[in-house]
Length: 302
Length: 259
Ligand SMILES: Nc1ncnc2c1ncn2[C@@H]1O[C@H](COP(=O)(O)OP(=O)(O)OP(=O)(O)O)[C@@H](O)[C@H]1O
Ligand SMILES: [Mg+2]
Image 1 (spheres, each protein chain N blue to C red):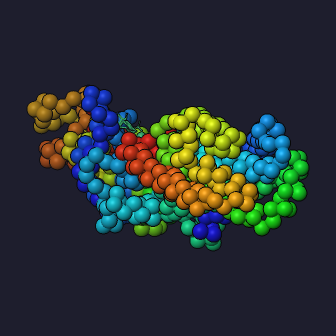
Image 2: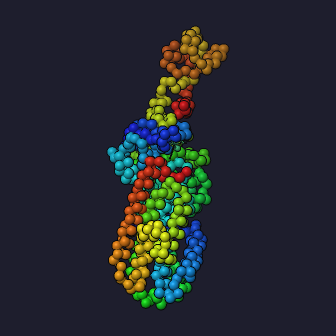
Image 3: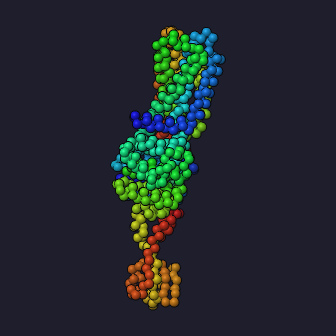
């Protein structure tokens, strides 16, 4: 569905040039939800704008539905909906309702469908009583939700959201994640989310791209990252025995806490431990799932 | 296209609700300028007075047209909506054309009101009746020049992507055009450099054209019409080509939004 081929983007010339994207290639199949992660300035927004043909790359191309986005921009306009960062996607002197109507006309939306979706989204984001309010007078988070509503109303094949949960209160963040999951599972469209919010990545995304200083470091599914042995972590409590103690000292296991008759520790290789312990010696085995956030943080950092 | 025009009417309505006082004062300002210029420059014999009023209205329309697209682009770049309208299912070009259609109609209505106020204020009712069907030809010339300046404005719209204070440049141009394009004084009395530049501008030729018609003198008419067309085509081309080139450059530099 979306192919990014060897995209490079260099801003400026000479000493002051910045390499925002460095030889990035990735392929996103239809129906997937991909999170873009990376420190500030890692190049996420630049890549998103290149995909939308809002920025011309220095090298490489973007193929959407088999067509080069740069050569046939029409395909991007037709198929992509984008909410860019900073809640600056709306006419601030128009009301929310007028904004929705304006963009619905520009996006050639079917009227009945538009009205139905509009009502649903306003309800779900708790903005029904604000639809006549001028965007200027909405709070920052409300503006963000309004921009998201407009992006969703287009019902694009590829929806791109740049930091959608920024500035949202906790309820709205939860609603946002629910709506995103539903909007994708119901229809057969694709979603890219740039975010610093690891809960979004963990709860909504299936795959993650991690950028560092313009380079794509990791592109993998969340599940396979979770299964990577180095980060597969179990906290176990077992009864002390000679076998166990030899094993522990041979493996140089950190984070252990010994009691009188038991030992508590974190291990990554469960099979080895099971092969030397009898079932009645096991007191507790627990998989540490929330490590994914730690993993992502580590990968996204330097 | 009908839906697009509808969308832009919605936009204009929203803007008017917010900024209608600006419009009122802007037009009062214009009325004052018109009165000042008319009483200072118009001949006492009144023969050319109607021509001057038409020329003033044309100048005002051309300035509105010239500044329109640069302002649109600048405002949208600041709001971040330029990137949004670039991403809709309607091409940015069509969006701009619909904006121009709606704005042009609105401007013509405003200009007509101004025109009729001045007509009675300067006591020119008699002259306009005398001119008869010629008036339609004059209005045609004015509207054609008006549209040319919308297209020419595209060039400055492109510049507005890079230079945020485009308003200042346009202000300078509008004063230059008022005084150096035959509206107030004939360019024949001006220094050679100004005369040459002035002769590239379609307004200069349009004013000559209008005056020539009102005087009922057809001697140089063909030549004037030709230069009027040539200069208009030149301005339109500069607008379209300039905008295209500058837009491409802006996409390279990532400047579709000012942050
Ligand atoms: N229009 C531009 N002109 C020059 N440099 C730019 C431009 N846009 C981005 N950059 C530079 O490119 C690099 C990547 O920026 P980008 O906005 O893509 O980062 P990001 O990953 O979206 O960061 P954040 O998490 O802060 O949103 C940065 O060093 C930035 O300064
Ligand atoms: Mg960003």
